[in-house]
Image (cartoon, rainbow, N blue to C red):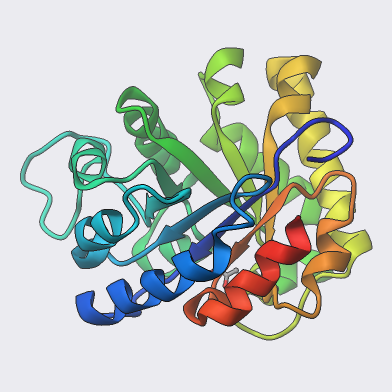
Length: 256
Ligand code: PEP
């Protein structure tokens, strides 16, 4: 628990990795390793869509939740290649990642489409993990806080305080994702504090104090404790290191 009472939340984003068989084997290994950690730290994994239901079944009775990696704003329809929030919910998801930088970069996601997906997630009882973060060029141009603020304002437009209070934000500098290059703890804290101040402006101080803000970008067992030790860093969204049970479990221990 942080000094502000926020329970740390660590989520593993598996991206387009793991067949059904590999996914089930990984969560079985993980469940055995994290049984003692789950009480103090909230934990989730985000497998590819094909593995969501078998992973959810394998994790039944554990404290590890399941997340989708994206959802569409409509419940059903002619949207080839998409998956809807009620489908994720029925398959066993408690959470959904929205607006990941790979979705923005390769699949045309915008703040506006993230906003629409977010509405569907909340309407279907999924906890959204809303990703924001600047590119290297934007950081070097001194535009980090401007870009992140625009993404938060655009993504969260039109939601009331109760709805914002049910969200998780993930600050993921694009230049740190999958690169092995991590933001320093001071860089992360600066942006997290700015995001929390913006949430206070949008939804009030009490809500802002409740919202968990995860850091993501090359989080590993050897840098997790330093990043998670920052006052406004309430957890991590972990890519590469979540594909190895021992590394993910070590990050959970650092969060505890
Ligand atoms: C991610 O995909 O959200 C991520 C942070 O990836 P990695 O940990 O591999 O940088």
